[in-house]
Image 1 (cartoon, rainbow, N blue to C red):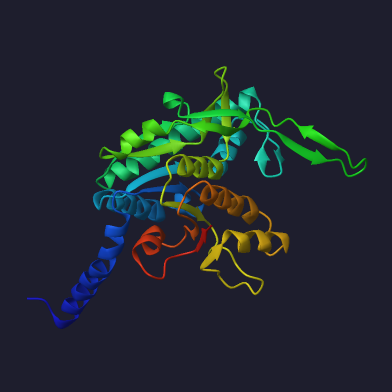
Image 2: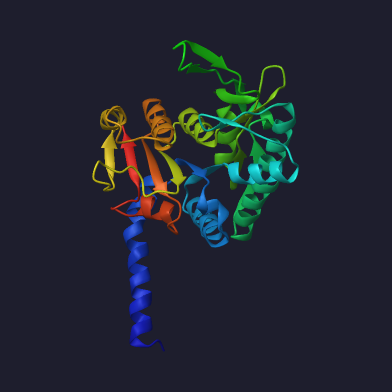
Length: 299
């Protein structure tokens, strides 16, 4: 026999499951692309909870696709090997030596750890990079920077830093039809076989767009998008997001994340959400509750 308190606890849990049922039905058969990074990836308890949440999504008929980053881990490995690296506008300049290390860390240790966590939690995950099956055809990223003295824009050479040119959605659609959960490292391949290091947010947005995903979930280390008073904005239209960027309310590192969300919803993603990955089970809160989590952006 259970005590009264134990009964209340179990009833509460049963109530949570019952409340989540309509949302499970709503998203069943749909694709959800999740960008995994930040503290959520760096702390063992959060990583373990994330893995369990992803397995749950697959179990209830949702098709999760994971894209992960790994900037801090790449930096630590480069330091260990005494290989210097520089950044321009937040992007790591990647020469031929550096890109080998980037691929080794992203496609190797990080990718396989996430795969292992998901498999340990009861799922069936496989690790891939954008090079597998020519999944992500990439081209060299072109950036211009204005010289403060001459006011002339000059092309920046970031080395083997790329951007997606096309995504082979067929491979991922085949995996969606199986029990397999793909975990993708943000490495692309050029037309001549070059290896490109690509921003993980960009890869997640491109994959979500190519698959017409119902959600793009961007796990970050902040609550979401904040207004001028520092209060969380739960939901906003694309036009409002653009306005906040122009008004310098959305600024710094949040700008490229919001721009990735805007690009994906314009290309058919139903909603793109910036979520605090430091909160346990944040993706379940977003998908299976009326309140949601973070900031959702729609067209």
